[in-house]
Amino acid sequence: MKRIIAIAITLLIAFCACFALGVFDGDGVVRVENKDFSEFTFNGSLKDGLFDGHGSVFFPDGERFNGYFAGGRFDGEGYFSGAGGKWNFSGNFESGNINGGTLKSDLGEAVTLERTESADMLVSDKWLFDGSFNDRGQTGTGTFVFADGSEYTGGFLHGLANGDGIYADSSGRVIYQGEFKEGFFDGQGVYFSPDGWSYEGSFMEGMLHGEGVISMQDESIRGVWDRGVQVQRYE
Image 1 (cartoon, helix red, strand yellow):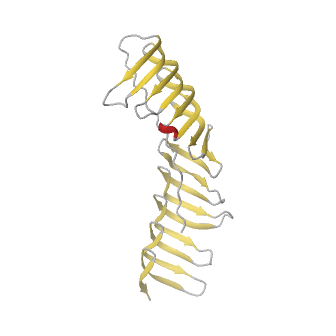
Image 2: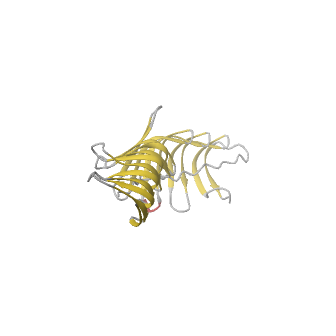
Image 3: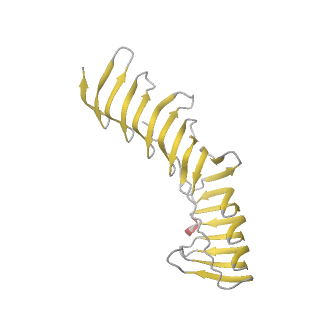
């Protein structure tokens, strides 16, 4: 059975911890070293003790942000780069939130974030996701369309299919309907085989596991399965 995996988009966005130790205006350098926050150095424009205007943030692991701020938050065009050039993100921010942009990896994959009033969408040259997500990946509900045209619609948690959902092939024929966990068929559900038989019952990690029934054209097989192997049959 095909494992349903939604690629998580993780962007390390450190909150700008700004302490107004007096009123600072103009260009300057701020270095933050505090156990409650990620250490970083800011070089840029300050207003009323907050990052405001153009500036750069440098993190100890080599990651950095270069762009615009307003009131201590990312605001306007900005560019993130990961340590060692493994990823970069170029986009637009508003009050500390990402409005849209493109994430690129050192492997050549590019994912574009498109946000509208009614929906959020992640688009690459191999797949598409329409639904809700946060900085740990797709979380909530949505639809993930794979490169071959098959798609999963349902719940997500941290970039993986989780909760109730439906997986269908490129023609729209339902392959599985039921519960998912960490990207696998897991829990109660129904699997529809391309060969014409179906299984309804319990799954674990994408395999038949627990009580269930296989229905074929001329007979039904009821029993118990252990990781895909039938270990008991009911008459």
